[in-house]
Length: 263
Image (cartoon, rainbow, N blue to C red; front, side):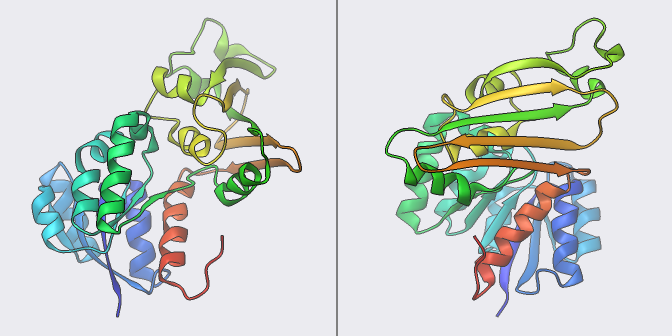
């Protein structure tokens, strides 16, 4: 019997996940509902992917999905995560920046424990969380984790790190150096993957994070460097399209439904 899947959000990432169900890449699931804030867009999405449109969380959860995948915003995670977990659904989160609210994160964990549900933190454009946790478990002292992100000057121009002359650089230039906690405090809605990676490794306050502006650069490039007592990791993840975030959700769903789990 297929598992019931519901999606939060009607954008590109949810469309990619829904298409994976429709095409048979997620053959173990049926898409039962989508939750959106815009009634027209939500109905258009639901009509195309043959599921129920919802603009109300109670109507959404009344369909009893076994898995809910969030591909909308940190606000959606804040507003809905506890109700979803309490209703008996597993929750897959892309907007991990919401859990920078430590009180919310702890409440969500408590609700999940009470109701035998799980919170799946999606890897998005980074991933490798199993290796990061392995490195952490292998070390009796905290591991050292540094993440470096390459971004185009055009991207940086739309952030708090823009500065005069940046669009004319000819060599890479570092525009931010701090921690995962600091980047979420400054610019919370873009670097969800950094916060997620920090939760899987050294923690938000100890995970170092750099942003380099690189001329003529396109896509995403994240380098994760880990040093522990008995292990060293150097992971570089390059992607030309942010759909990689949606496919990381597809991977989680596939593992959850499969007799063989790749971790």
